[in-house]
Image (tube, rainbow, N blue to C red; front, side):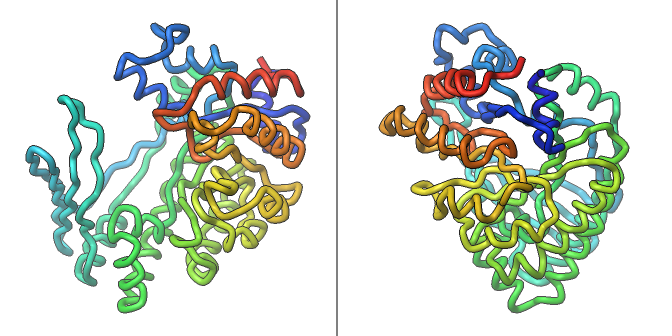
Length: 367
């Protein structure tokens, strides 16, 4: 069986092995740019490093959906030595996002929001206008090229979208202002969320024109971003709708829950989703493997589960290998083993190598 065949079989419920599918993009990109790749990986491309590590790759074929805007939207930017100001003008108003840029020795190492653009109800109306004018089209040729490049390393998985509410927190308002807006201007926030739901359907229309079988929702659901009352009202209906649409066409979909998620775990079985990505056990987050197992049962596919901190130098190798065995025992065959969320720039690649050998010894790595 190939890595691609096993990847799909896990979602179909017919698998017997374990797929080792850590996300290594940050680590590979950092060490390639810095010239610090270990000698054994120097001169290799991104997918070649995955092959050398005997790992599957998750998102290398996330291609084939093109986004564009059809409204009166004008974008511009101003750049200084340590900041970028992005301005979006619409008939409904103007949004201004301030990014802080960090440079070290001429290298741009960080670009992060310092000033969120949506603070008032007027800003919300401008944002709703933007969302209402986001459109999508399928590009089967682009998907086919990405699928061919990945080959038998994995079944392609395409990113779709995050939830409108967690997007409001991550990109538009920040955590506190998102909740102030929800409390003070509930109707306007809900109008924005309804626009996001319409956008979801446009995105799904394009996605369903591609032969991709597995999709991801980058929700970043956590106790803080989506506590039970918010999750129940605004996220559960969205997940059920998306899952139902994709299931009608024989597709699978999973959501991204990283960080502290113990309080929202009981809702997983109500989502109708096929899987959950990046759940992070203690001590990195607030839940145990036992908490997670109760929540997912034997139906929901779990992706990852090995905490990223365990790949740091100070964490013992033997404890990580013991944890890996426990994860496999508890969650296989509804498991795609990986790192929650992903290995960092300073993570030890030797631990990835050790897990490859462990999985091979326990159940055999697929081709």
